[in-house]
Image 1 (tube, helix red, strand yellow):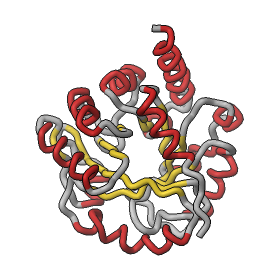
Image 2: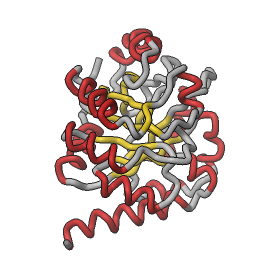
Image 3: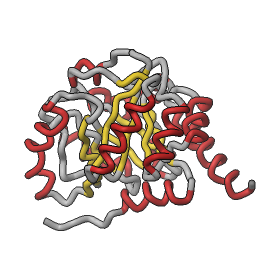
Image 4: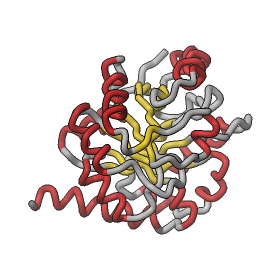
Length: 257
C-alpha cells in the first residue's frame, strides 16, 4: 500500500490553526447528472477546498465510475469520500472521511460498516481521516436519520453533544463533523458550534441546511473550520460561486482587521 501525502489533513489542520475558513461541496452520487452540468472550468479555478462525494441512499454498482468522472472534472481539487455505507469506497478518490456515527447507538454505523470497508480502505492509497460524525438538529427527521435508524441529538442538549464529540476525540478521531441532515430547515446552532469548537480545539466540519450566505457567516463566526454545502447548489448552481466569493472575502478580512 502506497500512502498518499496528507494533503487533506494538512489543509483541515491549517484552517483550524490559522482561524481561516473552508468550503466543501457535497455531491450526492444519485444526483451526479446535475453536478455534471455546472461550469467546471470556473470551479477548477476557484478557491473550493474540497469536493465530498457520498449519500445516505446510494447503493448502485457504478460508484467507481462516478468517482472517476468527478476526479476528471475536479482536476486539482481534492475529492473526498463521505460514505453512507461500505459500498461507497473507491481508491480513485483522494481521501475518505472514515466516519463513525457516534451520536446514535446503531452498531451498523458505529462500527459494522467500518469493519466491512476496512480491508479495502487499508489496501488503497486513500488518505484516511478518522471522523466523529454527529447528527444534530431541532428534531427534524431527514434521510440520513431514516437510513441510519438513529435520531439526531437536539441542539438544546448541548452538554450531550459536547460530551459525545469529546468521546470521539478521546477515541482517536481527529476530526468532528456536526450534521443537521441534507435539506434541514434548521442548521446546527451557533451555540453548539461554538461550544464544541471550544472543547475540541481541533478541525470542526459543519453541514446540513446551509442554504444562505447568512447561515455560512453564522457558522464561520461560531467556529466552524469547514462548511459543507450541497442541496442548495442543486437548486441554484450559482450559489457555489456566491459562497466561494464570500469565503474569500471573509478570509481576507481576517488579515485586514
